[in-house]
Image (cartoon, rainbow over all chains, first blue to last red; front, side, top):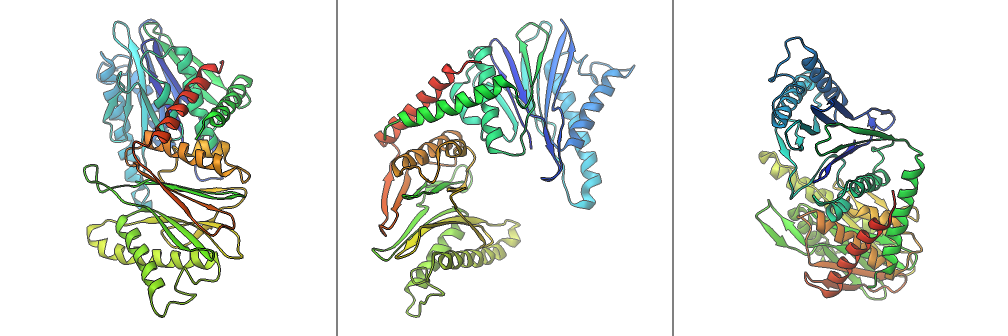
Amino acid sequence: MTYCVGLLLNDGMVLLSDTRTNAGLDNISTYKKMFTFEEAGERVITIMTAGSLSVTQTTIAQLHEAMDDPEANAETSIMQAPTMLKVAEIIGRTLCNVRQDIDMKMQAAKVSTSASMIVAGQRKGGGMRMFLIYPEGNFIEATADTPFLQIGEHKYGKPILDRVVRPETTLVDARKAVLLSMDSTLRSNLSVGMPLDMAIIRDGSLTIEESRIEANDPEFTKMSEAWSNALREGFTKIEI
Amino acid sequence: MTYCVGLLLNDGMVLLSDTRTNAGLDNISTYKKMFTFEEAGERVITIMTAGSLSVTQTTIAQLHEAMDDPEANAETSIMQAPTMLKVAEIIGRTLCNVRQDIDMKMQAAKVSTSASMIVAGQRKGGGMRMFLIYPEGNFIEATADTPFLQIGEHKYGKPILDRVVRPETTLVDARKAVLLSMDSTLRSNLSVGMPLDMAIIRDGSLTIEESRIEANDPEFTKMSEAWSNALREGFTKIEI
């Protein structure tokens, strides 16, 4: 499995993904699930992926190929599309085609493939937008009422987001919220694993601040312990 | 869906279930999912159910019928079975038979039914035991290493249990833990709903303390708010 979460806030967008991929329990690998596309000052796009690795890798590869094609245009390249909605449409179409193609090959094995993506981006002069793209290529968009999107193993990490994330949440708090959400998921589900990839896109900056959090990151470990202690203390204090 | 959780602790067993049943989103009802069988001083058994209501109701009805049968014996009646293991076997066999029978009727509709149960009990002279019974009738047992079992919508409420439940947890803390675990589930999943049914079986008491927590229970509401506040405060205090 996978856990990816994206927040769309007034100040910017915060994205976090794990890196564990597994085919069965005894075949575990580390793959980056966050992909950034940046033309500084013009356009930034971050894609996070969940699901069948063969589907997501091929989709990302085809998006790159379409961008690099000499005949690339606003209909085919996510770096030329006129709006973020168009970007989501191109990604959705590519994902759907790849999935159908691989599904057809898998039919004999009676296995079906699936994958979903979170796409976040902004282009010069436009607002920040974030989409969750389903395996069929259709998508939904984050709004002020629902300022976060999740793919993969999303349940363990949802209660903390439900409680603290609002559009006016600061980017510092947002970073903390997604890390704690990931921490709960890491603890309860073996198929989600370190290291983590984080991207922050400040509104209007048109740049992506990327960072990787390694397995023994002292700051993350400290935060994880502090959160465990806070939960236990809170638990002790409640009278019933 | 459903959420049921059972803790097996040194001091006793604590069980909690919700009561929401739904067939689609616009057909929501309240059904008790906790069933108690008690011969005070001799034997206590509590069963919690998740899954297809037609399967669980028929299974419980058949268990009752088998108990009340004039020819009931140690092989057929959970109130006469010589050990809790035998009790789990009888329940598992009944569940499996009912499910297979209903599944056969449903084949034309290409729908398959499923249900699982948590069984907790003690008989005079025996230890407390708790089992999770799968739709196929096989089961696993709670142990000191894994002192809790969950069925239904279990993910939202697992992080708090992972963090605070140990075999030496007191019954007071255990009660708080299952209520907070349920609170997180109620908040994040619409298909789990109040009122709640709770049962406490103190080790060696051979009685079941049952209680129902209604939708506007002031104590539960207060605890839920206190927990939200504790989470938010803990969140605020963490520095990163």
